[in-house]
Length: 218
Image (tube, rainbow, N blue to C red; front, side, top):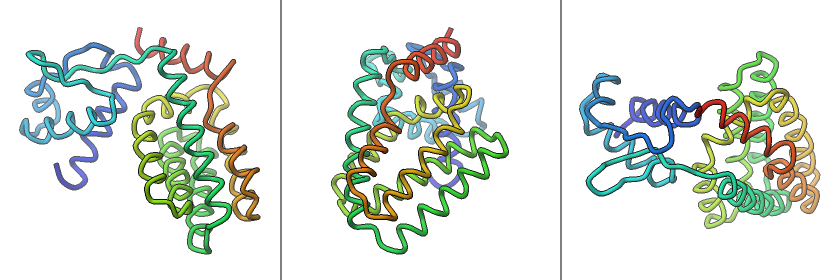
């Protein structure tokens, strides 16, 4: 799967899963999807395999690809791990970030702000992704960045859906400001603490996400 077309296929299927257009347990028929997107089955198969590596899709014997089902407890566990990984990235980024890293973070946050002001949830989602990946890069720990990226991919549809909870984008933007300031100032512990709080979902936030997920998968 190559270039922009491959990205669009994967991203569209990922979004359809997050929004409940493709429901947990639903079979993803290659021929039907190929007809929908106007492509051969090969790029569809490659997109499904990529989604399987992130856990969004399961490849089952004699049934092919189906949408994976993730329960609330499992979802909470994954966000807990993601929070710890991002906290580590933030701690190291505050100690190791150079001028180019700060420039990348500032640019991503500027794009986040523009999307938030335009009430553009999808635009914010992509700018937010760039912001977090810039932190991974700034950690200067390749293995940690790889693991954080893998978990980020696994949680992408849920992070995307979370941004559709009322008021979450504005709150996220303000949290970014604090994280960016801590990294700029070289405050490793504050950067770590703020990133963990930014990622972890519990209490009302977790309830809101589960309710939103239920609404889109009902």
